[in-house]
Image (cartoon, one colour):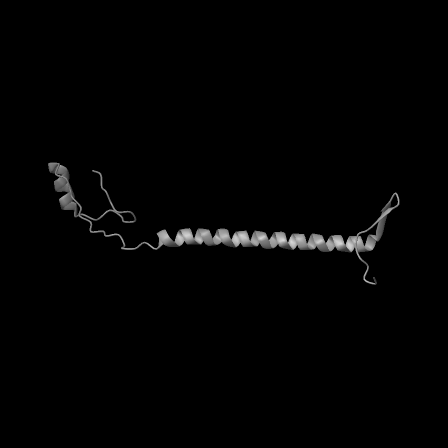
Length: 102
């Protein structure tokens, strides 16, 4: 005997005498389940917006991390360039950073 039930519900109870009578005569047992789905399912709307919001937040976090790393690299370069002073090769002198006194 196969039963088709709405999802999330257990099998309905039938009295023992009715079940035994159906088994003896071969008569099918019919279950009538009044199940109406909700008129509007919020999950269909909320889940895509939650995924899109997570993607946007992750994208902005990635942009902020890249900006921070580029800023740190620029500051590191200026500190190293200021400490090194002018670099000369073959009579050509390159000053990497301007001194604050000039």
